[in-house]
Amino acid sequence: MRRSKTPASEQYRLVMEARQSGLSDAEWCRQHGIGPSTFYNWTVRLRKQGCELPQPWRDEKLPSLKQDVVLLDVIPDEPEVHPVCIEAPSNSQPLILEMNGAKLTIPNGIDTLLLSQVISAMKGSLC
Image (cartoon, rainbow, N blue to C red):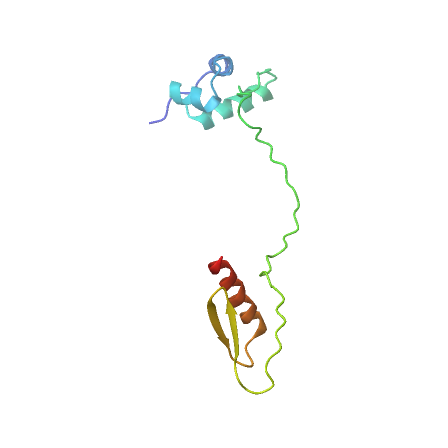
């Protein structure tokens, strides 16, 4: 059911009451059963008619609604690679690496990145 039209003088009185209440416009509207969109339409119409209205109440403790935008260069994380210098045996025998009591058998032709990641994991788990 649609309400009857509120006269401009009553709109002005209600907007002034809301703005002097210490409540946000939305909270005041909720407490008085007025739709926020209706309330804001009133403020637009009243300003167009030349009425001076106070700004909406804002708690100074709340952060500013303005958000600064900062351009950041995103540098992807690269896996930590520890240089490993191992001379492989000249024959086709696998390399055996012992670290802190753990033994790792490394076959010839292993991917060096994989080997580096395995050694890093071993260091972390054996500390």
